Amino acid sequence: MSITDRVKQELRKEINAGLYPGGSLLPTRHELMEKYSVSRGSIDKVIRQLVQEGILESHQGSGTYVKSPDNKHHIYIILNNDVECAESNKFNGILSLMLSEINDLDYSIHCSSNIEEYFSEIMLNPSSRVIWSRPSIRARYYIKKLKESAIEQILINRSDPEFNFHATDTFGAIDEVLSSIKLKDAEARIGLLVPPLSEEEPFLAVREIYFQELLHTHDLKLAIHQRTLSKKINDVAGVLSTVFKETELDYLFVPDHDMLPIVLTYMAEKGHSERVKIISFDGELDSFYKGSMTIRQNWKLMFDQALEWARSSKGISSQKLIMPEIIYY
View 1 (cartoon, rainbow, N blue to C red):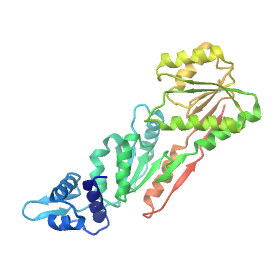
View 2 (tube, one colour):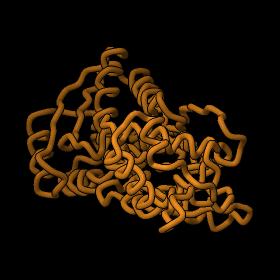
View 3 (tube, one colour):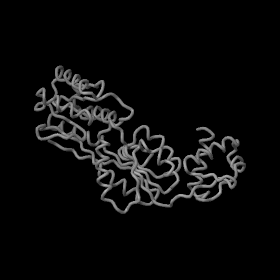
View 4 (spheres, one colour):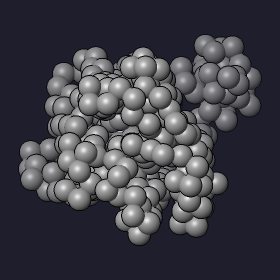
């Protein structure tokens, strides 16, 4: 951490803690230089950055003041709006409907790609509560900065032990699915079809790892493990052609919601649907896929509980794994 970042972090914490209340005059630059043992240039840079962030305001001839917060209790819901993340996009639609029924909150809804526009506003209000809907990798910088400034936040579907979170119990759900398969057919031939690894979708890698780990735990056989070059129709269909040509399968696990429609269409066209059962996350299947299973995440419950957390007293720790519904066809 640079000297400037260290001083800015310390000064921001002191402002949030009430050492310099809103509307008060900040100590002189010379006093700040002595307090933090830094140069005039470093102090000037810190003050300039905090003015740009909306935390301080400078008045020529009278000095630099701490900007007064609006003293309102704000709950910010920061959405993951990555176009590739169909599951989060689906949740965002559910969330919008839920929020339309809530009338007693002072809240703002902003997408994670636009967090820059509201970051200063959040920092200026220490009583803010932030709910992140499965934050992307790009959001990590802001999550870290909010933590450094003691802004209360909770992550939906990111089970990070350093933060408050409510997340899907992926391990428990896959364990239940494989336990069911084991009881039906201990010799079941199971395939795994996954997309390329992506920094923006680390949860897919987690599902893949848990699946293989639990196959071993239940002593089930992984007949084939294939990774596609992309999520494009031709690439997925090409891999599926190889899979069904080389291996007899009883089950095919497709952890990626985006690829599932391509898989279902290919299997229906090639006549594999009645023979091979699908295991999916948040998949929309019908009775035609008899014996298949869908792990359906309970987004509504996760948000409801996160909202209750946000409305509760400051400082409450909350780390919960939410068991999803297992749908058997």
